[in-house]
Amino acid sequence: MQVDVLNDQQLIERYLNGDDKAFEVLLSRHKEKIYTSIYLFVKDRSLADDIFQDVFIKIIKTLRKGTYNHEGKFSQWAMRISYNMCVDYFRRAKRRSIVSPTEDFDIFDVLEDGDINAEGKIIRSQEHLKVRKLIDQLPDEQREVVILRHYADMSFKEIAMLTRVSINTALGRMRYALINLRKLMETQAVHIEA
Image 1 (tube, helix red, strand yellow):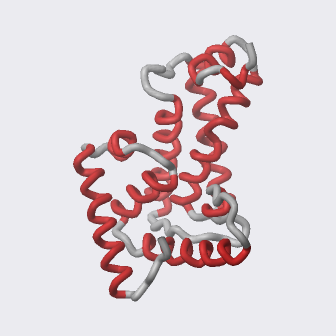
Image 2 (image 1 turned 90 degrees about the vertical axis):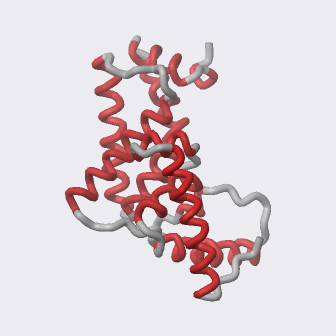
């Protein structure tokens, strides 16, 4: 059976039985989502690279120890590890993350944009910059939910588990984030094309 058609649990079992290719498939399947969410929290490419590497070292160690509980989804578990490592970093550094691009990484470069022309790409890039600046102005809890929901593509249930709040609290934070984003758009006269 081809390794790339196996589900996550089957890949884990194959990896634990000595098939390193199975782990490579597992890593490539989830790396973009996990790396992107880490980067959006820490805003530094080399730091994101370090945390990403630490996340997968921890995953490997946990798998090898046999303490991974496969009742949940692998991606949720891996996202929880990456989130916790980012939180630990900020606790140590006591600084706030800002959603902003750097010269060598922009989250919107990762997202698919279909077949749009050069002018469309420029307009879209400008609009994404406006949105990022607005998101940066949100309170930490609201910004966190927006990042996890729209950039890491997590469900509200996953966000609630990851941030250790109720689903209603996660939904409320998103609701207030959207209200605040609308207010910011009005007060700053920001217009985004639909």
